[in-house]
Length: 117
Image (cartoon, rainbow, N blue to C red; front, top):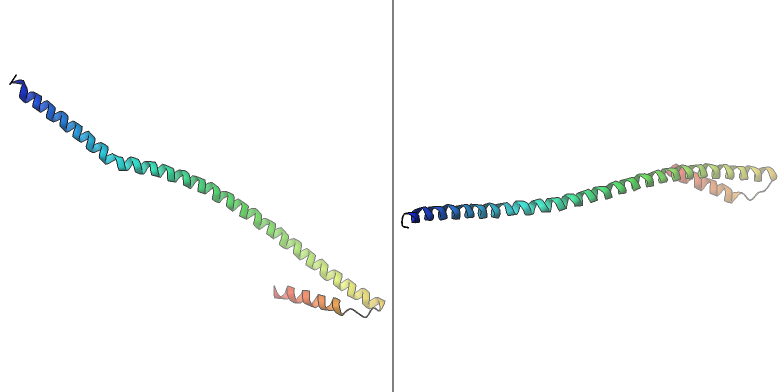
């Protein structure tokens, strides 16, 4: 029995060393595993944010197109309004209607506004 005792102590020491190395490896890899989990969560959030940003950009692009169309429509209305004012002034002058000051003032105001743009 005394002959087996050194071998048993060596076996237990090697086993204890293996257990200690496994515990050290597990302890050292824990921050890595935790960091990996956090990275996965953040990647999912980034994917969601990317989708939100794409939708937002698409919305901005469509909104910008609507504003461009509205600007074109406003220019057509302004041109038409100037034509109507000119027609009314000419019609009033042709028929002898003398009270065209408001029409002339409206025309000047509109032209000043357009010139200031």
